[in-house]
Structures are given as C-alpha cells and as structure tokens.
Image (tube, rainbow over all chains, first blue to last red; front, side, top):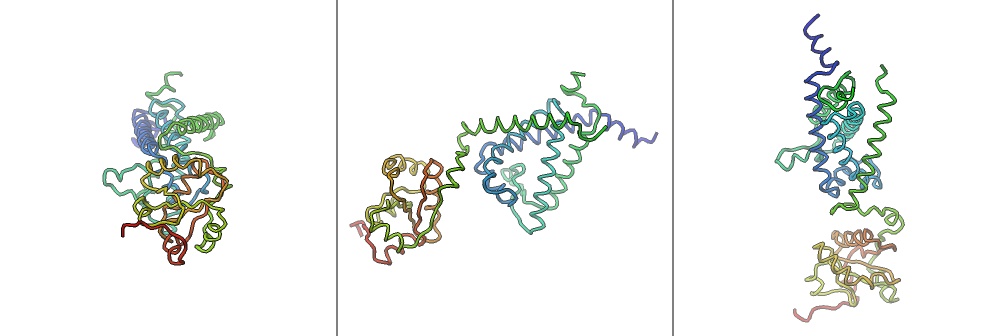
Length: 159
Length: 161
C-alpha cells in the first residue's frame, strides 16, 4: 500500500486531521456569522453589491444568513449532525463562489463582506484569490461530508 | 453510498428552518434589526415632483411641507409653513418625528425637500417614515429648496442676515 493511499484512506475514514479541519471550519463560520450579525444594516448593502438577490429578499438574507452561519459553525465545532452541517456549509460556499465569480466576470470590484477583515486593515475585495480560498474551504467541507466517521464529535459518541 | 442521503437533506432542512426562526426572533430584539414591514414599502412609495407641482399642492393647502435639512439651514430660510425634521443626526430626527407625530398622521400629503437634486436627506427621511409605518405616498421636491426660492414662492427667512 502506497503511503499516499494510506493518508487518503485515513482522511476518508475520518482522523484527527479531519476533526481539526472540521473545528477550524466551524470557527471560521462562527467568526464570520458573528460579525455579520452585529449589524445587519451594514451587511445588507454588501449583499446588495453582488446584485444577485431581488431587493425585497435582501433584509431577510441579511438577518438569516449570519444566524445560519453561526449555527453551522457551532454544529461543526461540537460535531453534532456533522453531515448535514457540512452539506449546508458546502452549499453556502458554492453560492459564495458563484456570486464572487459572476461579479468578477462582470468586472465589479467591491468588498466581499466575508470575514470583516477590513477591521484589521486587510483588503477583502473580490478577486481570484478569494475564489481560490473559498474553493479550498469547499474542498474541506466536501471532505467532511464524505468521511465515514467524525472523531472527537458528539455524533461519534452516540454510535 | 449515495452522496446525499435523504437523512442529510432532512436534517439540513431542519437546520435551515431553525436558523430562520431564530434569526427572525433575534431581529425583533436586535438594536439594529430590520423593521420587516416590506408590504408597506411596496404599497407606498416616494414620488418626485417639480417645484411647480409642489406649489400647486401648497396653494391647495393639500400638503404638509417637511424640511429635511439641518436645523441651522431651516433657520436661515425655509418654505413658509414647513416643519423642520432634519434627517440627521438620527436621534434628533426621531425626536422631531415624535414631536410632530400627530401632524404627520393627518390625512394630508407629505412633501419633503432638502437642498436639491443631489441631497439624499429627503429620501432618507422618507425611508425612515416608511420604516416607522407611514402608509401613504411621500412626495419629494426634486430640485429642493433652491428651486423653490428661484421660482419666488413663499419662504420664511431668518431676520438675522
């Protein structure tokens, strides 16, 4: 058995590495949801920038998306309903990637409103780099979705 | 194993519904939450009118004129009979709305104006009134106060020049 196959099998089976990745993703979602929740009226114009949603749905999205991110983050960290939460997170990530890609193609340039890194002076304008970052996140979430077990989680204790 | 088990879909749906429920509840108490009365926003809307149209409403006495500029600008000169409800600062704006609440509720058209084409305070004030549940259309004088003055319509100016 080649060592690579062993590593891949380990990942697919669920190991400490997937547990760490799961918790990191959870923390990211918690963090991003929290900052978006503080001020929905700041977040709403960001959604509006993407020009994808009808005006009427924007306030609802500004309210619901941060809470969804917080809940998904918490579920991923404690490892409860890991499959469902990684599935939903993956869908969100795919939506984000699509939204950024569409706007990049249109030649738009604005703050992506992902992690509020502007607070720390880090530019977060939509870019190819952002898409790559989100693709990596999406890959991690897809991995979490297909692993057999989720070590260090509530799900694994119940078995 | 199929990639997306029906169980995962069901649990995902529950998570989404739960999030929506929690989010709407939080929004009720969130200091910066939304007043989700979008229905009113669709029904009533902002209508931009010219200075001349505003004057017709003025002459008929069919409208209440509201000055959304700052209190200082209002003091310097304003449309005769207008109320001063500055759009900013927000707290002052809310206080003024509270003060004139009964007058704003009168079955009379509301005409808001500010310094002209590019000033956004009239629209901001109108949106705030809609947010507070104002149900009728709101008229905004497109070219604002300068046009009114230019047309020689009635104004009240401060004696201190």
